[in-house]
Length: 279
Image (cartoon, rainbow, N blue to C red; front, side, top):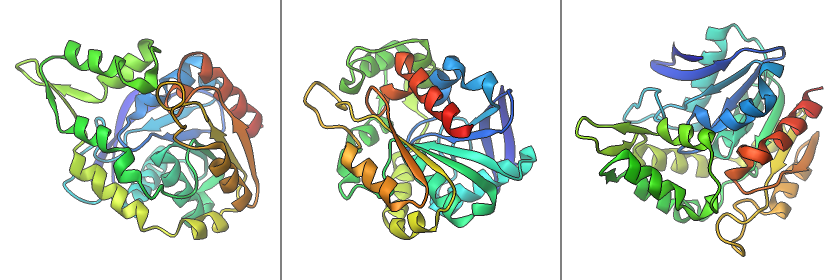
């Protein structure tokens, strides 16, 4: 299942879950890793389909170059992976920032993408994105005394609202490296993540959406991203505006919030929506 490919001058790590055609390639969120889709695999996305989930450059077990985090850099990594796997065309999906990478690929390289699955991201970049992800960036720069301390902190994050299972814990295990002295640090560097954000904020997203002619499925979880009363990361009206801007798109609401939508009892809802979309 754990594999890697040399693409675009880096080593790209990915998880290859064998299954039926058509192949489905999934791109995780801004600071996330390929294991963020484990809940969907457990819910039956594989072996129904062959699911390839990757670690973007600078995340997880992929190489961490000092620079090179534009949308085009990420796109070339994905295209290189498709070439290495012998995939001429795929159904492409992405969660959060990974959804923006998928949108970019579908717009710029339409011959490689037959259908597009966008998971809880609008076809724009939030103007206050830097502020919204500051807590995540602060976490990336911290050294935590132990794995137990780290996982205790993660369980207390308000967006989990007490939710936890083995798939979530495996996702966090893939997110960090444990040093010889037992201390723990996230694999992603805040500088790389900020560079990715800066590039994304400079993209003409309205033009990209207008260029997409493939069928699109947009999955939106408008639950509170934190305690009750907290706003969702992607409000329903913003998601529906993105659907309206696309030539051929459908909207499906998923229970949970931006992250819990991918796990546990919510994951089968996504698998059902994807199965219906893929036909």
